[in-house]
Image 1 (cartoon, one colour):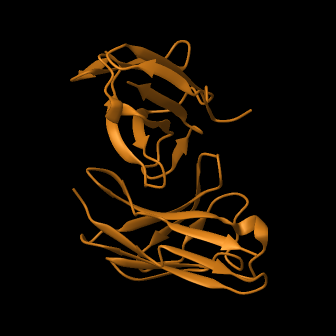
Image 2: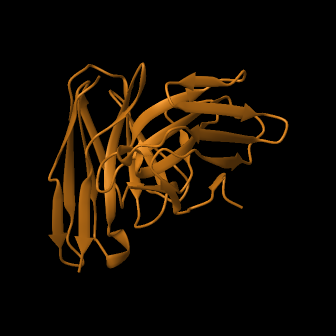
Length: 111
Length: 110
């Protein structure tokens, strides 16, 4: 199975600040995905991070709020900008390698 | 209306019993279907894919009903370790754009 690591695993942040989450995968993949799972809710796709091009955002998510970098085939970052308490959630990166694998998630709490 | 709907449960199941639950999806063009398992504070992990003819993996049986747009999961001879949240996942065609249900919680009791 694929190995995906994320850091930080959790953070508590102040309103108005930004946090960058890193995702490292052990295989070279063209597409990586960023999901959000709010408390008690299902996973929601934020964006697809393509290597060599701009990320593709889903409805309700914008680049200014969630800028994404994809510098190579094994790494991606998601930044949660100008945070508010509503951004408190688990953020998961994901990749496809015969099946869809998820990172362990970053648990974000915004005060 | 949500794309994928599930009964949140919890389903309290005595050890050794059978439990079954469904998931409905709204997009009739959906192409592939999965059950994922998510343990508390962990990431989702693929339990099994769901095929049109129905499929079995050990104690787990998945069924797909395209006409009624639902999939089901049945767990036989429940183990304590089966306690988890089971996520119904639908792929509408573009690999990676998965639609997730909110999950069905199963609690297996001794």
